[in-house]
Length: 70
Image (tube, rainbow, N blue to C red; front, side, top):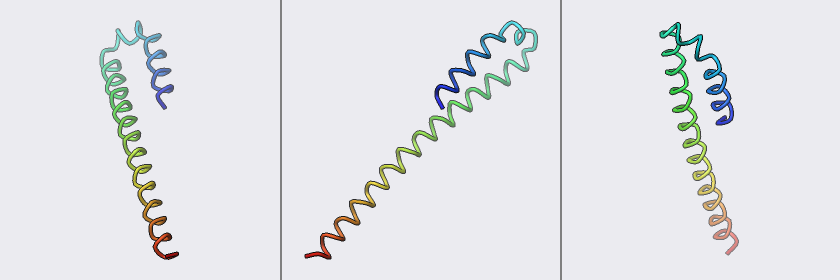
């Protein structure tokens, strides 16, 4: 996803002269890019949280399995 953000920024930079003539469009695009960056950050944090919680669950099941085998 980060590559897409970089690609979008490059494409917007290429359109910069045209965007200078329409400040509202430039402002809107900047806000959208900021929102995309924030959503990317949140997505990454949620994925990490899910990975951590799933690893805890697997440890719990292995502990339970070990206890049952004893």
